[in-house]
Length: 276
Image (cartoon, rainbow, N blue to C red):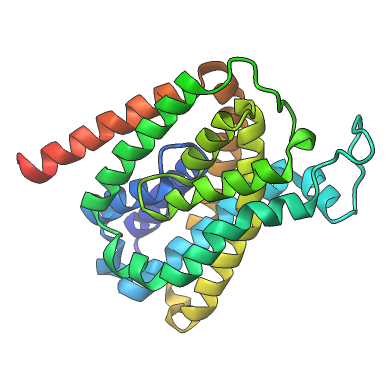
């Protein structure tokens, strides 16, 4: 395995880590960078390339666990959060309620999505429509949100955010973009909506990734082990940086600047696809 091949793994880990939890669509960026530039499928083969993308996604998930470890342990009763009134703390059931809609639809349409929606064209559609939702959330969301912490989230809000999360099954839409926008429109502060988004990401992403990894385990080759390890570590490190940076940034600039970036990206993609 040549050094340039490992550089590809580092780049893809960087793209995954920096975009997985920002509202810009990690899937969209991975399709763009890999299919239009790096083309790891030519090197690894189709199924092994898909397995690699699952592995680096696990690196991003591990970063969330590191950042939110206290909150995650509190959900299963292994840690007591400070300054939380009895009976108001965010529970595991809130998270599960939020996961139900996208979880059900994902299982029903997984094969269709994998076979028909992972293209640059569908990503462009997702980028544009997701951007509109984000701008609408910033413009029409409550100026003074009532829900300013995770421990104030109701089951109705959790389920409603879960419904909006279903849009993210379309590549390019962005799971965090959808759920943060939905949360803001439902009265959550931007930071609270982001925190809830990241916490929901752990079980749904970990579950989907492990199932996909088991399904594709036969395509994991020892010859590609270095490639997987570099990608995993890269995604973990850059996701760790991205999460901490984004949580501060989203409170200050909200969602609209990210939406503008997405629209510019969609325009650039349209230019390269149809005008060059």
